[in-house]
Length: 620
Image (cartoon, rainbow, N blue to C red; front, side):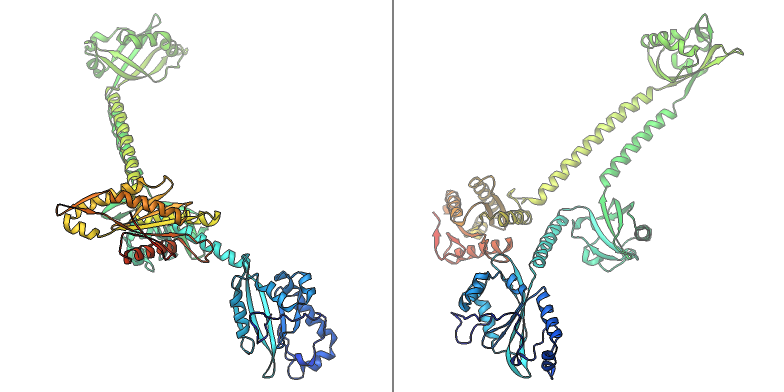
């Protein structure tokens, strides 16, 4: 694998010797796998065929590809793993053409010239070397090179190659997973914190900082007792320890004062290790407020019902019909009769027409059978008022078990029905409040990802969308272009007409830009008077047409400065994703668009520049 010293452009490949060839005296001091032939070891190696076979067996069974060459570029040793890793066909080996073999090897590499340069650097070097080789097909090898020395004389080199493709891919997947996890955390509203057994803040997830008591950097390393009142700190620490000691998830609720307001949290504590647990806390303040309001309404309802005075009536059965033989004052007063007027009167005559039908259809029969249950009945007052009640009648029987009458308790539920109506009203009110809360949350969510002035996506949300679209573009190899622009001399507009006029102009530009792009394109306010457009499935040349349409539409805006029309122009930078570039990310592509915009500015404004191209286009 080492080219001859005098020729790099047409390197010669040594003719591989048979792998079973014995090591000659010129190959002394061959330090592979810790076996040294120095200081008389060569004579011992010659004398021991068993040791020689052991050495060759170790080299051939190695999972690394191993190649040893002398200074004349002759192959001293190459194991089967080396041939397999470099996928060298037998027909190439059979031709014994040095240049053909080297060309076959370097054609597989992403950086063949760098490979040859590194080999040339090591040709006369006694230094060890370690580097990484990248292949066009995505493979990645570690390359370790050590000199073959006989005392101080350089006899050649040993090259060891290890395939780390799977490891590299795992690293890349881990990096992508970490990025997705960070994005997930950024969109969460729950608080996620890792505590140790003493309640010390070990880690704080980067979720919505508005839900934290203090900025994360101020709490890390401190304990809960340094941050919270003792009672609340004791509660959370106890939950952390319970989770760790029991090795299970523990739940609980607690309150905090955030921004001067009481906030309720529903939390779960899960053990992470023998000394740490993770807290995931969800804000349930709105739910608690709704529950408190509902509980207050229920307590009011129960109070009205339980405090309602009871009306008592004792009846005797006369010819199969219950007749009043006694009643309390409240019963008579409620119905507008005197007690004497009610005694001897049939109970059925005091019911409303609807309740009288119910009583005649089954009430007597159930009472006589001892099955009378609590029921609602409407009593009819002397003045015609309907008095809704709940009646509970307990049958009375004689010694033979025959039902002779009842003891009935009537509870005026007029206030209860009013309370029920009020409860329904409160329930409707709570549902309305809940709906308003949901709508408010939706509005807040919308405001979090949009620019308040123009209504476009804001800088942060645009990057979230761009990152997702960039990953899709890389995966499916479709074009993705970013177009960044700002208004030329916008400061002059603000200074002359005022910031209110400048804001109106920004809104107008946003509306015009939106009208010139597709529904699948994304327009965002990047900051100040800078705007950015993401164009999926669009090349830079196609984006140039979009940029020209935007410029033409913007040029049609009439801006009056000092009673003279002011021509509004744009400087635009365009950058297309380069799939073939290693390590490219969405931030780099957007930076390229920004650099192209800067070049348009430097070229005299009113220009369109595509990153990587010398040509600029004047906007029309």
